[in-house]
Image 1 (cartoon, rainbow, N blue to C red):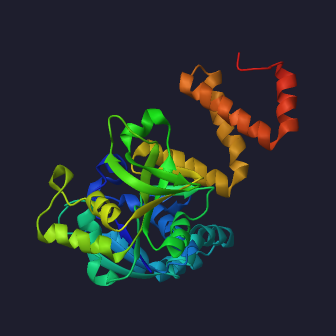
Image 2: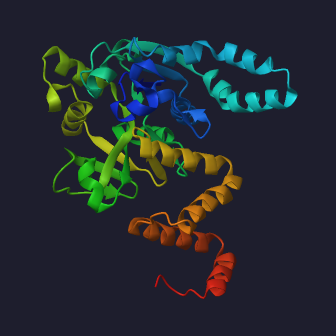
Length: 337
């Protein structure tokens, strides 16, 4: 099976970070010490997928150069004379080298920004008539295992196209593409798809991971050949998914971990902190210290931050009840009030 990664977009929400096409592509912005694109590919490797089709733009040459320059990157680290610095550099590129050398990659190009469906369609000649996966490089997952492996396991059972769903707060559901249907544990038989509905019928958001049968690719091709555009006059993947749902069946698999959207600066900061702490839990005291300094020197503390603090403490209490009780006793706190 092959993985399609649509990465031709300009990343307008991240312009000040990437400086458009004049700087680093957003897919190569480091997240927890590793380029975001490498984390996406790592998700695929954990699912047993080793063939990647990168849909790029001719202006984003750095995406291709990352794969073709792995040997040079390793040599540059090994040529460091200072042994301490050399070890530090080798550690930094370890994941990059480990993941990059396990992947067979093909690059195809999307010459015009005509929608996500059009981007996926550019991989048609490489994919052929086999099932394929799609991963949007802005979406990253923690604590629930490989999102693509969940889809692979379910596809092996049912044979149907499927996608990852993530339960969001109802108040935020209108900001997402939403799927609804009959739930069977963590599997949903999707009966309806709605893009940012004003009155959502579900809180199950469609998040950027898909495992699709070749019939979806053929529907994308049909729409393009017949100029059947969708929202914003573009060729949307959602339109092909709706056809698949109505004619062949479509399932969703609920992801029970945490999802991070790194397509905007705030999301990138959140993901950076999350991945750093996951890999280096010794960093947590430093982050807590920063928050303490912010409060001590009069920084604003929004009500939402207070609510999140109590959620953190509840989770902390479940993990380390004795320490949590000691904190409560020390500060004589028995409730939020």
